[in-house]
Image 1 (tube, rainbow, N blue to C red):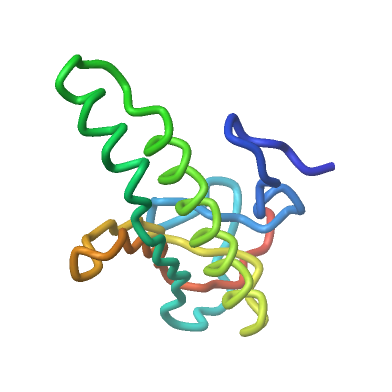
Image 2 (cartoon, rainbow, N blue to C red):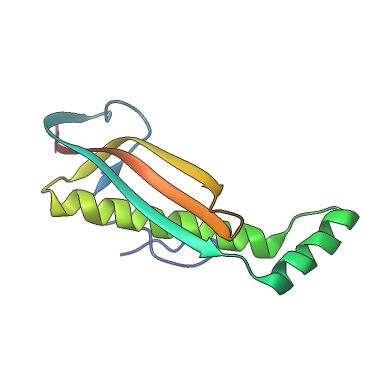
Length: 122
């Protein structure tokens, strides 16, 4: 059963695929390393959203529209990374990280990356 996050969408790791930010997976043994994998998404900026966010930033508080967009982008990048790892025959990713940057003032780039591995439960 897929776990649904706060902002919707299924958790791509709920099917037993392992994703960790650490070098090893507690309770598992790494059998093979398949190399670097990544998932990338770029979201364009919405003029009206930017104007609304600008007004909100003057008043203070969370920019919920931007928070939701970033959460969706992270989930999409994570799903793409997991899909790439699966295509290599991996059942896990170690040392997973997110990187977020501006995409030439046109949008936001979100990248999930790590090392694809095959693991076995001890």
